[in-house]
Amino acid sequence: MDKIVVEGGNRLVGSIPVSGAKNAALPILAASILSSGPSTFKNVPMLQDVATMAKLLRQLGGEVDGKHTMVVHPPHGKKLKLEAPYELVKTMRASILVLGPLVARFGRARVSQPGGCAIGTRPIDQHLKGLAAMGAKVHLDHGYVEVECKRLRGATIVLDMPTVTGCENLMMAATLAKGRTVLENAAREPEVEDLALMLNKMGARVQGAGTAIITIDGVDELHAVEHTIIADRIEAGTFAIAAAVTRGDVLLEGAQAEHMDAIMAKLRGAGATVTVESGGVRVRGGGDLRAVDITTQPHPGFPTDMQAQFMVMATQAKGESMIKETIFENRFMHVPELCRMGAEIHVDGRVAVIRGQKKLAGAAVMATDLRASASLVIAGMIASGKTEVLRVYHLDRGYEAIEKKLRGVGAKIKRVRG
Ligand code: UD1
Image (cartoon, rainbow, N blue to C red; front, side):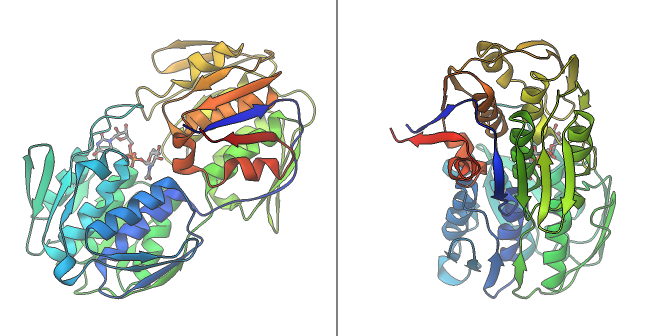
């Protein structure tokens, strides 16, 4: 298996192009199912998760061509198959995003139930509750969810929590329903907004995306679109931390500052200089970093997908930082690995306390999720000696050419094929 080898000590200087957002690309690719014509998507990040979604769309009977610009012919005709199999869903939970579009367009779908994952149990009860409220029959059968409804009808759905993919699934389902659907306590993530923008280009009538109440007036059919995916705020945030901790100076080319308020506020609080420029966001690290406390929250709060990376920064800051993870129950798996590199972090339930100004030393490390793996790469860039990050497939799920991008700004990092 491949590994990433990092040698610490270099300042990062220069600019890094930010790719399209994984979490926008996945629902948008799934939404292509809602129309009958071929849609074109630009700025699609080349990631393992995107490849998995393309594979799933092909399995359903669609055609997917291209890389950063992707053309998707939605499933149709004799090849149409309304099932997302376990083999694919187990590798990517976001496969559940085809459920809403399939039921809305074809009246039926069978999708393997995503199990728990490394960061928590992650149920899909809200997705199913919403579809049931829209008139669908929902059965659980041998590890699969089967959902059926000739035509969904609009409903008012109050989500128990602002689930991102849950909201996206229901929003997509509601576009072709009869009547008005209102999603209350909706997720406000920029990726939900990007999906709504794309759906409206297809002829949908979605209002309020980006707020806690989304209203969708169902239409009879949707048409093909061309859409450019927004920049990945989490990828940008990850490189921002790398710039800050290496006392570097990096322009995150194409980063959309309007999606990064919470991340930029905490970076500034920690002493980094963050400026919004015409080409993106510039991050400079200089003097001593200061401790900051963080509580992960749904957007516009601080994103859970940036928690592990900020923890690495906290190991270098002056003072003691506290990080509280409120979204997922088991998202501190990077802690033991960071401690093996010399960090001092104490975890009690959902709270981690990090002692700052610790010298890190390179080691062989691995993580069981994407963002935790990214945090280990950052740790490697400030550690003495060599760090080997194993299980690189986690990184490849969500970061496009990470070693190439970091090498471009001066990091000593390479992939060793194995
Ligand atoms: C999405 C993102 C992921 C990010 C997460 C939180 C995608 C493809 N993935 O994941 O990168 O870490 O948002 O920002 O966009 N929950 C339920 N029942 C449900 C649905 C969710 O209890 O039916 C709970 C989850 O267990 C979790 C919380 O709600 O505790 C938020 O999860 P959710 O927003 O659904 O995360 P995902 O959409 O899976």
